[in-house]
Length: 320
Image (tube, rainbow, N blue to C red; front, side, top):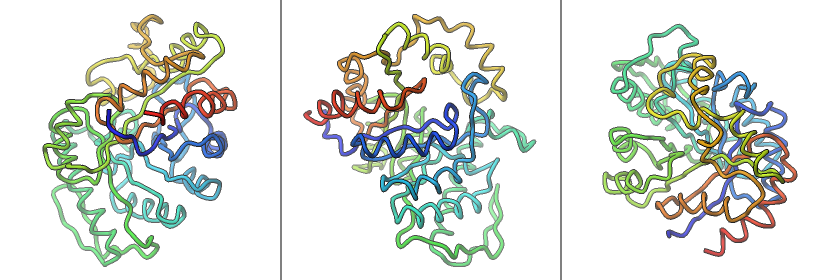
């Protein structure tokens, strides 16, 4: 098992209202979590989840409420938002957090990106777009005036004036070998929600070296394990949908249709009040070579969840 540098809390923009996310960020800091992930969605995966606030406004509020580092998990800087705007948003987040912001990026999902009426590209094309977008964002992070005419994006005499002392790091998520190798080439760190040692190894061997690797998972604390499993199944059955559906389906109702095939006994997330169950799920990531692990609570009950993690989970996790 590698030594984990940080245990963070995963803020779910799809499930919780913006003010609830800020409150959870405060509770996470009080409970001893080291950092925050926050998802960036236009739509939730399912209507049952019920939210999807504008992440950049929420990050601004969080920056004034806590001192924890914040990473987007993840932003797609290619279709719904032009990379010039993502660069400006990330730079401002870096200023507000006093340098504690990391821009996590990925190639996106049709669920969030189709809303501007653009064609949904193939996987290969999305990775090409992402590579160009990251390059353009890095140019803008220099604070110099940028002109860019690329295959997918243009920028004309663009300059960022509000910049942190150091540009935000850029991490990239990836699930297949092609995206992981791209992350190794262009990103300052790698992100995944799957505890796959092979992908971590590929990232490091493809040029990622000792750069940070972050992983995230959802859990459902409840005093009753059966009730927790039912809650997870009701709110996040899409977590058990395999394959490329997450990237290709455009509407929450499409995921609801597929989710009908997911039975309660298929739920793999840790559920209930047994600390050993939660620790075992976290250790899947640490055993796979992840440096940082982010855990998100499903189904509300934040005070009880944070008390549980502060007293029974985080101390034991940090013993190893």
